[in-house]
Length: 148
Image (tube, rainbow, N blue to C red; front, side, top):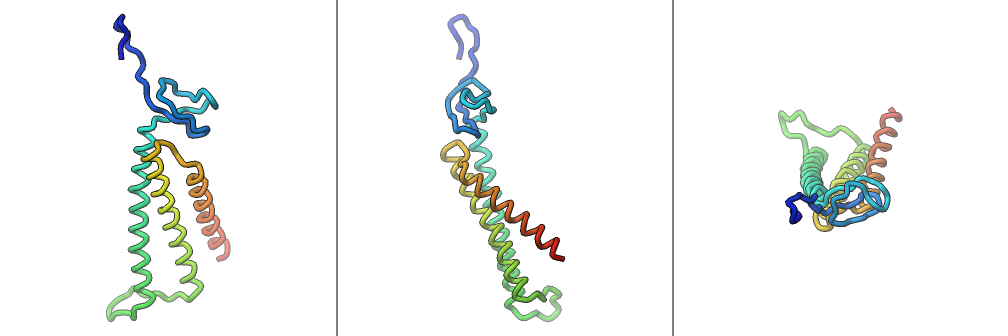
């Protein structure tokens, strides 16, 4: 956009504030409400696509891995095969818990990505859920490693 004098004006870009949710077409880089750096809606949507792709990959990978583990546990060992499960019921419950937790993180990531694509901003509740699930995952790992 140019003025009659031929001086170029800054381009208006739709931006959002990750902290307070401010969203406007503006040339500003700082939020007028809270002072945080504004992020372009296009960037948020691109990151949303990345979340959907990554979450979907993780869901598919964990589903395939779950099926493989299931087949190791429930099928008799084939002659010549070196893969077999030697754990007990406690290990099976732990594996199911960890796999379910990872798949839940992936599912929430996909939902968050879809939200970002549709609305052009992050959903604070889904971000909090991801942080809590990640913390549960880390604490589970710490508990298991300290128990040995």
